[in-house]
Amino acid sequence: MIKIENWVQQKQKETGFGLVKGFLFFLSRFYQAGVWARHKFYDLKLLKSQKASIPIISVGNIVCGGTGKSEFVYKLISDLKRDDLAILSRGYRSKRTGSSRLVKDLEDGDEPFMLQKRCSKIPVIVGKRREDSSELGAKLGAKAAILDDGMQYLSLKKDLQIVMVRANDPFGGGFVPFGMRRELKRKLEDADYIGIHGATGLQNYELVKRSLLCYSRAKCFGTRYCLDKNKKLIGLKVGVFCGVGNPQFFMGELKKLGLEIIKKKILADHQIFSSLREFCDESNRLGAEAVVCTTKDYIKLTEDEKSLVTPIEIDMEISYDAEKYQNLIEQINNSVMR
Image (cartoon, rainbow, N blue to C red):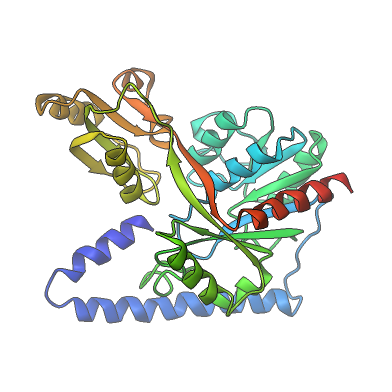
């Protein structure tokens, strides 16, 4: 979807974009109708959701990427401090097919593999049928499961729903491919908690919260990214490549850490950097003292390529309404204990 967004932004600079924009809006209406019809089938019980044998905590979003969803899953796991949980993922862009399985390596998808590396004490399970994944988690001893990117997965009932939104564009400017939204606004009423990610200040956060509460009675809290402060990099000239949902944040935070960016490359989300060596060579010629990237980009590199790059961890912290987030942690713990 990042590729679509970049393509639309490029077309806006060209003459005749009005016609392209109209065509994209026309296509988005079909997408919206499909989303509405799918929900209607479930409402009328023509399609049914299955109840898992363990509580399911869904973390999802209403737009395509850039809301901090995967980082929030890791934060949840870290703050819950439990080893009796499982993470369920579809395994986006997985090169393996078949039944639900434990994440083994990068072939199972970059985000599940990254979560498996960071949450080594709990199982990360991938598979298209999340119902089967939840049962595999239960067999492995999990007393509850975190369903990553679960809002659009209607075949499995959720005991708790958390929705992440971007503070700068909570509704994505319309349905894809005209905008970045992939869910009906009214489905926010199903959310128990909403994380408002990346607010620029308290006023921005409160304005976004007010707009969301027109559709939902969920408890809201704010989140923001923070970078692992690698002291060895502070003050250095660096080359940077980045393939995440919100690359602008990463670039901005590097500057705040005192790094001087002399060459950069923005990749599409999940994209593998096929010309890394050329990028590193060019960065070095320009005077770079290091080449850096996110850990999500780093895990996709070969062992030889990893020796050329320094990864920087992106973490998440609670910025506003921390007590609501603590309520969420307590509610999950209580559901596991029951």
